[in-house]
Length: 362
Ligand SMILES: Cc1ncc(COP(=O)(O)O)c(C=O)c1O
Image (cartoon, rainbow, N blue to C red; front, side, top):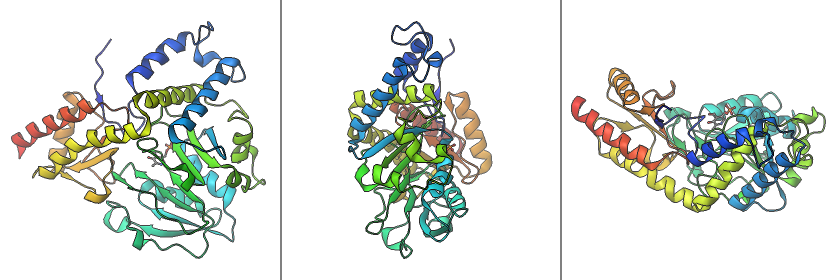
């Protein structure tokens, strides 16, 4: 078998080694059933257990209260960009969005198809390199809901704490790229969604955690599979769900629990990102693109003095076993995505590699 490299991909991202090894075994035969996980009926006992445990572990991890539903949907996080306003926003209503990057912009665009979308704050003026301060947020009169993106995968910025929506306004979060990287107080939200493929598992499942009374407020005039209540009432199995993706997410939940839960994840992620940011702060060659108070612990974006040097850096890094470092075209440069499952050793080794590159080219 070939060697695995350090995978800095922004998503799908790397998965815990123990999870991949368990999946290898269960692909052939899960729970001694003589049938692999990919081949089981979604109505059978084996898959019942997979779904029950995934939900229970998710609740245990994030301390999710009884009046919230944990659901697994399809269509990626992008499907939530339309599913949310389709359910909750009417033509004569306005939803408030904080625009902190490409994904928020797409969510706003979809919301406008169903009603009004007011941009309560934006960091577009400086190419989304910061998170707007609380006093820069201008909510509209009485928004139907308030939406923000907790971690901006492309620009490498992350909210330190959720924005405070006006009293009584349902708060919605796209947490696709930092879900369960730190503790989360679910009770502050009406609905949280996250594509699985960064911190939770493979592409194909989207985790949605939503308050029951909010789910019930959703429109009933849209197709059943676009209503959250359908997933809530049918244990996410109204039709054939992405069983394998949910199974993987379930294994990742167990892995996070084994690591000590979300407090441990936060400590682990803070310690992991530190050597890279410290090095970037001291370097006169590389520089971090996000403002210091807005930096993401998940996606570290940085640049070198010229595009030629960046190209050379990425090529040499790839050869040396550091994969997926090319930044998104809207920022340029490099991006090191270091999600929950990314090993700390990979960051230390990358910093050593950067130091040597800087010595040669600086
Ligand atoms: C913050 C955020 N939201 C939404 C998306 C879109 O996710 P998907 O490709 O699952 O639709 C991404 C993808 O990277 C993302 O990072």
